[in-house]
Image 1 (tube, rainbow, N blue to C red):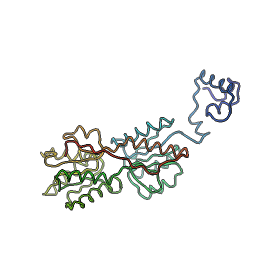
Image 2: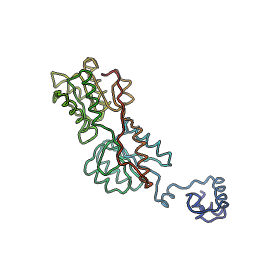
Image 3: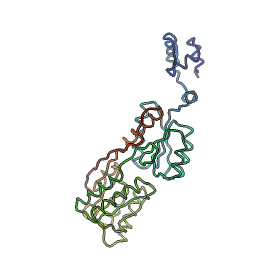
Image 4: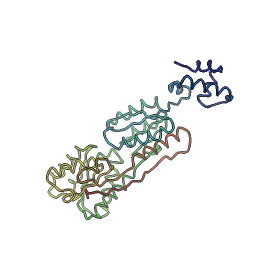
Length: 327
């Protein structure tokens, strides 16, 4: 294996000169630089990333902690991150928590010793998580959640939920149900639910307790939530706001199995613009959160922090309502 020492001997220069050429730092005469570059090209020498990281204290790696690899949102975010980071010679190290909040803390501890910065696709902002983040000296960006004093790329969950509810009301629906998730997830669980409730109250519309169902982030849970809603109330809603596409798709599946017609008997709106949403029958009205753009923005901000350049502490992305056949 060719080493810096070998390159120096073959080019008749010192090892420090080779190092300056490789790192493009410090003065090197044109003649010496040319000899070093010719030897590097001839030997095909590639610097060790690990050795370079020991010298520069930079790994050129960004850690990414995500809640799941089974849904499209994290994969789109990671695609955006990778696209932007690769332009600057950075790689990604992924850590999947499977929605385990303890794993978030463990991975923060693990990654802080291996990377130049961390992107957390967050599902909560609990005090223990925020405390851990504040203890870490590395640049950290949250995606999907907002927290004081932490860089974040977020979505306007509250106003999205209000707009979706208003859209259903404009279509003539007055009995509207809601399928959400646990409110420990402030963005998806709390803000989307609050937006729904506030818009219903603004129109003085009643909300039946049985029409509000709590689920988790999968299609089966949406199916079960809809089953519970139908079985426990005699008066059914005519429309449903689901906080994710997967929950909406699961709920629609249950209704169709029971012989209901969607959207004639019950209309649906989801959030996420998943690929499946356009192919289910009926195609699902949903919101595109532009997740890939979120990844790109997070990458730009964390690189700016690493380079001690100007950065934005909070970015709220826009969104797009996609009207399809489920309403």
